[in-house]
Length: 388
Image (cartoon, rainbow, N blue to C red; front, side, top):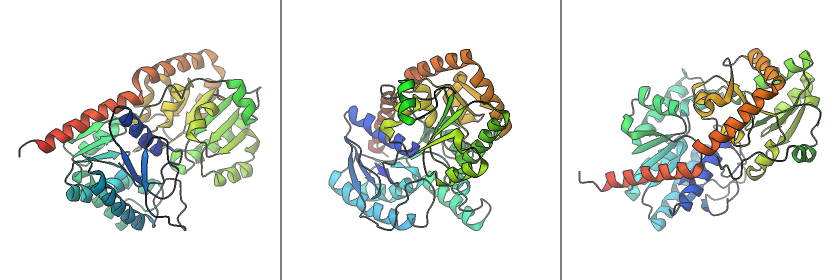
C-alpha cells in the first residue's frame, strides 16, 4: 500500500488509509504500507518509511516543491519492499501514489489499484499553488490524465468523484468504482457530554458547535469566522469548538475580529481522542467549499449522534442524505441563519442525531468497506490471470 503522505497525521486522508488497511488485515489480507518519514506508526500495520529528511516537517495537506524528491525516495523504498514482499497487487493512495504505482506495476508485474480522493488539478488550484488556466495548471491536467489512465482499477471516495472520472476524464466506467468512506461505530459513538465539556473547559450554559478537520480556505475556515462574527452581532449564545491544524493563522484572525472568546481552539486532535472531544458538542458543522474532495469528518459526526450543518454539495448530500441541514453553497449568511435555527430547534436536533447514528451503523461500517475492497482485489487478480 503506497501512501505518499506523512502518515499518520490525524486527518481525513490518513483515516481512510488507516481504516482500509485495518479492515483488510482483519479479513486476513497481508498489508505493508510505504510512506514518508514523518507521522506515527499505527498499531497492527507494518509500516516502511523513507530516510529522514530533517528540513521537511510539513504534516498538513497541500502541494510542496519538496514532493518530487520525497516521491523518488518513496519509489525506491517501495521497490525494495516489493521485491522482498512480492505483493499480489499495489494499492496506491492519491495521485502521487498512483504515479509511482504505474512504474512499480511494470517492474513487479502486478495490478495497480488507484485510491482516488479527489482531482489532482482541483486540489492544486484549491491550495492556491497555481491557476487552472496557467501553464503549470495545464501541465498538472496532462499529468492527471496520464495517472488516471495508467491504473487497472480506480476507487473513489464519492460517487460524484467516480462520475467525474468517467464523464470528464473519459475513464471507462468498468474501471471506476465508488468506495465512499466509513466510520468505526464502536469507537465513534455518543459520549459523556458533561465530562467532555469539563475536560475541554467549555461553557456549560450555551450550545457548543464543533468542527473537526484541517484549517484552510477550501475547508471553509474563512467563511466560518464570518459566520461566528455574524452570530456575535446577532447576540446568539453559542460557543465553537474548533479542532484541527494548522490553526495559528485562524487564532490570530479570530482575535483580530473580536470573536476569540467565542472559540476554543484545540490544535491537532489525536484520532483516538476525537470521539471523546466530539461528545462535547450539540451540533457539528462542515463549511467545506471544495467540490472535488470527500468529506470524511461527516461520517464521524453521524456516528457520534451529532446533527450536521453543511453547504449543499453533491458529496455532502450523498453522505448525509436526510440526516443533514444544507445551506446554499458558499453563502455565509444562509449558513448563519440555518445554524441559529438548528440551535433553537431541540426536536430537530434530536431527530437528526438519532437518524444519523442509525445511518452510520447501517450503511457506513469500515468492515463492510473492507469486504467491498476485497471483492475488487479478487476481480483484479482474476483479470490479471485471464488468458489474453
